[in-house]
Structures are given as C-alpha cells and as structure tokens.
Length: 284
Length: 206
Image 1 (cartoon, rainbow over the protein chains, first blue to last red):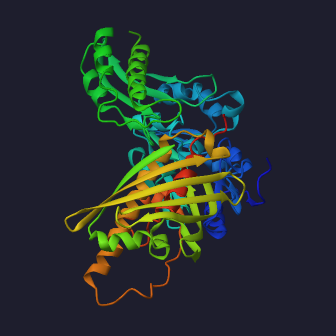
Image 2 (image 1 turned 90 degrees about the horizontal axis):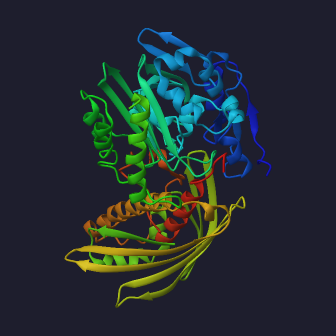
Image 3 (image 1 turned 180 degrees about the vertical axis):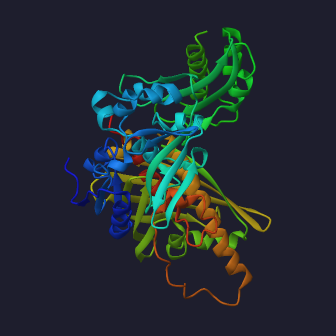
C-alpha cells in the first residue's frame, strides 16, 4: 500500500531536528533507518503529518571510546557496528544480537537507535542494551538528558522518550573481553523472536566473575534475569552449574501469552535458551 | 475471543448501575473517546488510540440491547471501523454488577471479534492493554461516582464540559494516575483494546 500524504523534513544537525520536531507538532514522527516505521506507514496504521528523517545527520553516526564507555551514535547502522572491532571488544553481546537480526539488507539500513526507540518487545537489541546497563542520551527543546536503559523501556512500543525528543546516543560501559551469546527462538529465519536470551559473562580461570542476563519478548519490555546472574557469579563454569542457574530464568516474571506461545511455554523457552546462551558463551 | 475484567467501585450499586448505562457519564471516562451522539439506548462515538508509532481512529456505534435491573445485568453491542480502513471491531459486552456492602463490584465479560489486519495479531497485548483500560475506567468511575455521593444536593443535571480528548497513549498511561478524564464506557474500552491488538504484529519482517 501507499502511505498517506505526509510532510518530510531532513535536517542535518540534531538542533535542527529538534526544532523541526517541535514545529511539526504532536502528529510528527521521527524516522531512523525506517525498517519498522515504513511498514507501519505503508499499512496506514500510522499517518503522521510530518516525518522528520534523521538520515542526514552525520553527528548521529559512529562509534567511539570515551574513557570507560563505548559511545554509539543512534543512527549507526547494524552493518557499520558489526564492522567496527571496538564493538566486539567492549560490547560483544550487542554484536552477537545484531548478527541474529533479520537479513543483510535490513542490517544495512536498520539502526541501533531506531530499534531502541521503537521498543518492539520482540526487538533483539533492547535486552542486550538492558543487560549491559546502557544509558541513552536524548535531545529535546530543553536540552539533553540521560536515561538508564532500565528506565527507558516503559511498555509495548513505548519508551521514556517524549514526543518532542530524539534519541542521540547510546552509552555502554565497556565490558572488555566478556564472553557473550544471544540465543533466540523463532519459527523461521527472519521471524521475530518468540523468546530470546542475551547473556554475557566475565570469566577468569574458569570462574565466572560477573554475569548479566536479560530476556526478550517475555513481557512487554526487556527484563533482567537476576536469579540466573546470582546463581552464576563466583562459581566455576560447568554444565551442571549452568543448568541449575538457568532454572531461575523465569523467576518473578509473568510472561505474556500470544498466538505464538503461552506463558508456560515462554517460561520453558527462557530456561532452555538461558542454558544454551550461557553454555555457548563460556564454551562449557 | 473472550476477555474478562473485574470492576470495583466504592459506591452503592444504585448509583453505579444508572451511571454505567448512561453514555454521557461513561464516555468521558474512556481514554481517547468522544461521544458524538446519543439516541435512547444507542449512541455513536469515536475512539482514538496511540500505541508507539501507530495511531488509529475508530468510529462506530453502540447499543444497550438488554438491561435487566433486577439481575443488574446489561448487554452492550458495539461495532466500529477504523477511519483509514484498518478493519472493524465488534464487541458484545456483558456487564454484571453485584453489591458488596456500600461497594459495587462487577464483571465485564467481552466477546470480541476483529476483522482486517488486527485479526492476525496475538492476544497477549489485547489482554494486557485491556486490563489497563478497565483499570483506568474503574478508577475514573470511582472518582466521578464518589463526587456524586458526597454532594447529593447538586443533581448532576449539567455535566461539566467534556475535557479535551486525548488518545489512549501507553507512554503516559502509567503516570497519569490522577485519571482526571479517563473513563470507561466499557464498550468503547473494548474497541480500544482491539486497536491495541492491531499493533501487536506490525512488523517489517512479517
């Protein structure tokens, strides 16, 4: 289908984009890589008056180090991220998740910022961002502010971003040389995750020093599996330990039920995928 | 698809019952709803829903096809159509109230059928969004009815001007606990739920 008519603005700086968004009013919509928004526009499920395209804002692209953090411009594509060795070195979990996203065409267009701002519960980058304690910087008419990932995801497709704000960068504390694995379950290669697990661990001499585990598509937002993390930390990594720790994956979570899976099945998947993700990450 | 929600209103059943049957009273309590006309037991209206990038405007009619004051049971049939052609929603809502001291509890049983794109979406989000809407509805109604009870002298003949309509917006949902205007016309609420369902599987890769 053809989208409804809309105005189109393509600013070249963040300040211009914020001004354009404010001017366009509440029915404006920001477009990043367009891999989620375009289908919605074409189905006419959204009919914004104005689309503000961030594609020409160079300052929003790229990956850099800043002290103990890795800073990723919101408009950096998956493809560009994967090509940058800094990502694998300091945030391997993000790279692992990106490798599972859709297909090469979508990875050339889709952006990390777009995925996080869209906040699809089945989106594959939200749980890794949560697991790595990312902080999201947003720009609005009253300046910039930072939002921790744990407070950013509010509900289905809904974030702490206000309608007049733009996500500008994702700041991830360096998890240098941590092992990581993103394990997802879906029915066909390019379908959305029914459940997925993002796991990353710091391991030294066979002992797990630190662990972060987060789950995709269990509820309307990504969630941490703290029970698993606690069961892993300080222990010697082996199959038995990981199997026992994974049993805590769905603790305290009331998974949603939809056409793909009911709550009990989601809990089951969370345990199985957690076991696989941690075992693969540590090579056990 | 069948949905069931509970209501609890801190007001006597004799106050709650007529309020539930009065579209003028109830419509302002539905997030995003505007009542465009009332004619006896039937009414027309619109419900605007916004979930993430998706904005839908449903337009339709509702009618109380049955109300049994003895049993405190009413049946409402509603149907609506998205103004941009994203399908239709039909709902049959059965409301049953019961008295618990000076409180009123209720069961809202809804039979939903969705045509068009929404039909392919899963049920998880509908149930979830539905629960929130009924929660808001209940809170709004409780607030409005509590006012009626404490000021019995002023017969609410002239309802205050309808507050500005805002679409159901999940972003602001959680925070607007004051629920100044969110009320529930149960039927309209159900329409809103349906719309929420639409959103569920709108993806590039489907």
